[in-house]
Length: 103
Image 1 (tube, rainbow, N blue to C red):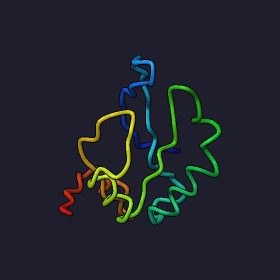
Image 2: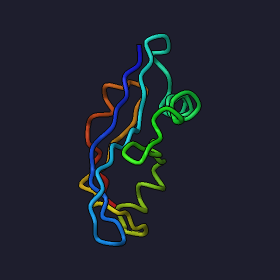
Image 3: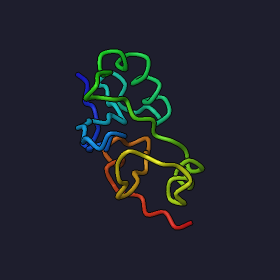
Image 4: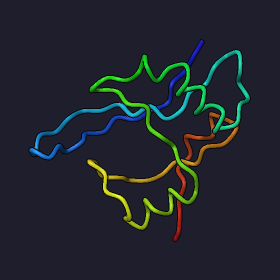
């Protein structure tokens, strides 16, 4: 009764090795289909983060517009390349549409 949304990436470790990762960033639950993105994220953290946490799987924080601005302005460093951002909406199916952010 639960669908997880995520993506696969490969992090470059400090020693140069590549580590595969699945970053889970959203959840859709049959009993609560119309939750706001922030409520879905709380649900993901509260109910499923422990189950999903492992060396290969991580619950990925999906930030607000200010955080997206920081990503696009290269104010943060990440162990993998970022090709784009997602726009989270109350309709979990719409979160799959890429967000083009001009800063």
